[in-house]
Image (cartoon, rainbow, N blue to C red; front, side, top):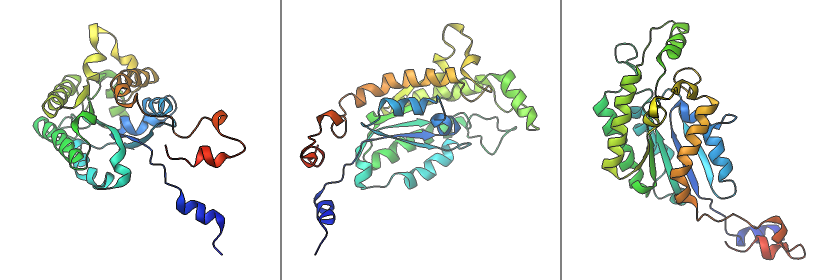
Length: 250
């Protein structure tokens, strides 16, 4: 005799949760730490959307475009429910070639890599209107130079160069039809002290994480505003017949 639980499981449709994928370098990888921008976005979307961290510390856009097909499978049912993808590379690409050749990617190649990432996403059904590019933030050279010296190397990035990559990111987004969050410009707007947004001159401080979360949410909210709350509020569950509330298709 087949157990009732097995019969019930075979008749229940699996809930496929919408997904937001955060794709980037260490600034994305660290975004799930306490008070991180990714964690704040995930909290806003709890029971509406899974927020998936695909941040890879130290990676550049050249490596990103190679591994992206391994992260999102074509014709996968689970991947057909992606509401948005953030693409946050450039902080490593913009490393100076003579000081950090391993991570450096030439400016023109960086731009083409971003476009290729958009094409790869489109090939698995993630259209450009669901892609949000994020530029590298500004670099505070005095603080980052101290970090470099501690590791036995000279300063390997310049803020002006990061700005060139940020501009290339903005242009690539426009050419692809994607949205863009220009951190490099916003964090320096009106000559403000952008160093408060950075913990070590390159990575985000708590205030920087809050800044990114706030401005990213402004771009994300229209894309997720209509997502329903998944599964009923506990007070709406029929206590005498929970199956009627919990096993109905949403």
